Amino acid sequence: MTRKLLRAIIALSAGERIVFFLADLFLFHFRKMTVSTDKTTDAVFELLEKFNFERVEKLMQALDWKWGRFETLRAPTIDEMRDHCISLLFTAKRDLTTVSSGGFEASYKINDEDEEIFTLRFIATENYIRF
Image (cartoon, rainbow, N blue to C red; front, side, top):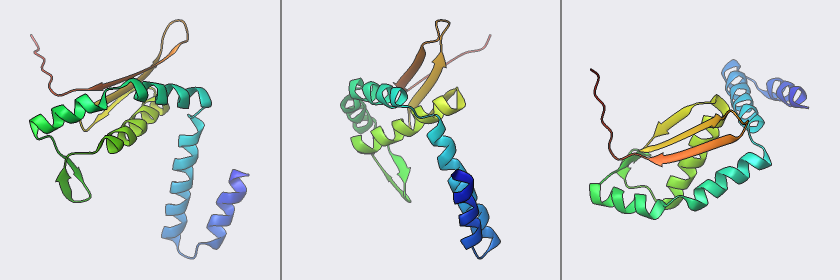
């Protein structure tokens, strides 16, 4: 079914750039869908439900923390933070790694008992030293 759809997109597209853009867009979304299961989605939304976005919002206000969005600098809303975290969590699972952006850090791993573990953090400051 997916190859038929991709062929239809290519057949309907007039220009070469459009073909590559649509093919990339289709494959990007298809790849994202392959990491999502009902179990994964349930885990992500359970994690987000327990995460204290209100506390993060207060910290961002106190620090005058802004995100660059749509050519403006402003503090994100809680809904924007949630959406951003959903994207980070699914990216972490897809790539089996840790990703971070906007102060949020999302990670995914499978432990020795084959349990899947998502972690979500907001990091306001961090320091390290090498010696």
